[in-house]
Image (cartoon, rainbow, N blue to C red):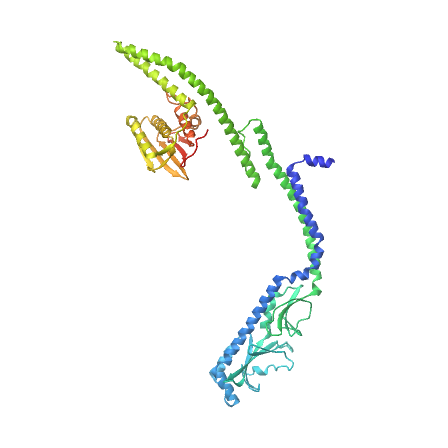
Length: 559
């Protein structure tokens, strides 16, 4: 009971790791217990399909070797010189050129000699000379006919002489037998091709002829044993077999058993240590997530969670940070909406309470100015009128920021907006010695409120002009990138430092004497209401670049 309670209160990472450790070790113990059954089935495993394929491949190579030798012998039997020599028999000596050809064929390492026999199997000639007298054919030698040729042997080594076998082929002209061409071949050249099948201590390959004669890969007599695998015949009665070396199988099996059991124990210990380490690391990665959740519950949305964890842990931390940012933005947005609502009510009250008296004052000043003969007083009246207009413009900007008009979108040609903007700012640009460059896709069109777009660009251009009192260049660029419309307004003015850049979008923040501090704030609000984003990049002495991004397709404005 105590263990169950401590287990339920324990770390999730620790519980997971212990469960995974048990799940890994239990199958390992089961495998160790059942190993003896596996060892008993070892002979069956070594004769599985892979061994069968290897055996058949070796048998195919040996069959190909025999076919190649028979083709060579057939080529000799088909020579006119062979038929002419056998027809003449012993009465005519062998032609030198023909004999040289036979010597050349006999120079192969697989060939001991080539013999020409009369129809009664009497030896007429051999290349090299005397090759037919080296070994006589035993009376009980195995004999098989295959593909128009006779295969005699194999003859095992004895008295220090190597093993061999014969391929004999008849020579006929017009169905009249003239004699035989016989090739004496090295037995080891055939049996050595079985060497890849050898597995010392487990199995050995044999060439078995008529199930009574076994030849090892070395070309010597092989001992009988339990047959593990047998190939298809390479000749009638000839086949390749794999024989178990049962006398030497037990010792390697026991050594292997002990080795595997030792490895299993080491593996269990290593897995235990690995899971303990993984549990600690997992707890280390989960702890910041818990701390981050506690911080969010306290209202702290500024503390990020490290997202450098491996795999899903890193993805979880990234998702948590994304959620934290979304919550912060949502709360800030809600606060901003409430603030704007209150600000809108206040702005409406201010506009009502201030504009009406200002209108009365403005009318009174206008009447006094008409009847005033003193020029100094007229100048004073003009100054008062300008200040009244400035206050009215500030109230208007304040109203636009507090209660921006909902966008009415339509298809807008950027080229027409650029032309209108150039016309509106031409006098101001000339006055400040500023050049405006227009670039990009001039025929581009997209969905946006045209009045808002003109106001956005006009505010940015006028701000850029104010940043260049000694003249400069303003560049307006429009491009389509990744399904979005990107508008860029760049100037070569004084630029802004990092602290100023952080405050520049705040309402009523300005670095210019006489400025209201609402121009960029209103601009950012208009961009947001048209489903766009605005990014400002500026450096002191390097100018400012404002990048506006809008969806190229029709989209709904955010609420």
